[in-house]
Length: 247
Image 1 (tube, one colour):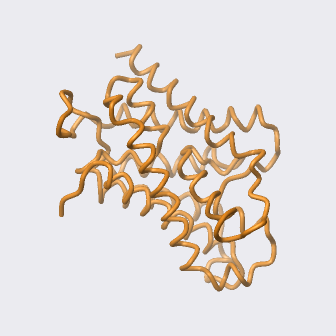
Image 2 (cartoon, rainbow, N blue to C red):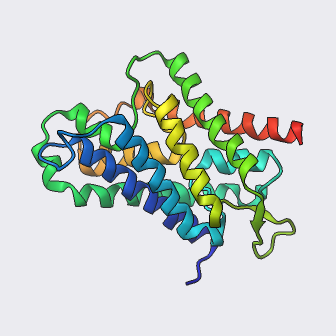
């Protein structure tokens, strides 16, 4: 198997959101196997495993960032080429959109059977349990800071990309497991307040699916949507800057 770095980011993020939105749907929608038994541990564990699977598949080709905040944080830390940042972020967003849309089709009958619109929306995108934009922003910032700083501390540069003079940072191979565990513990420890997007593509791609394809004319809570976009970007950048300062 061979992939270009950009396609690997698209496909890896597609896989992440297919599995992640599927986990949310299975735990929240009417008449699914997990509806009566689900809990936050199951959701957090499922997302951690989804990250592990997705990173393991494409890590050797692109480094498997699968997250614009990770890409930006690594660039700030000097561990990833700035020339690739916009391309990575664009393909991550496309992959997230396609993954969430595919998960919607897998659970289409259950979406149709679920009348609580807030429940349906929660399977696609995050939202705060207590709406306080400042605190919600800080929560997303902290969660993403932990993700990016731990990633920088765990993994070494390992991806040589054609045309790039420096070796770029990758999360593939054996490092896929600890990264999955980091996402798992973030969900358990810090995810309860906002649903822990910690990934702008993870939230924005599925939110677009909910608004434009899956649930037309419904409120995708765009008033909140800036929080899971800019909170992770700031948190990832701070983590990258602190790592660079301590290096």
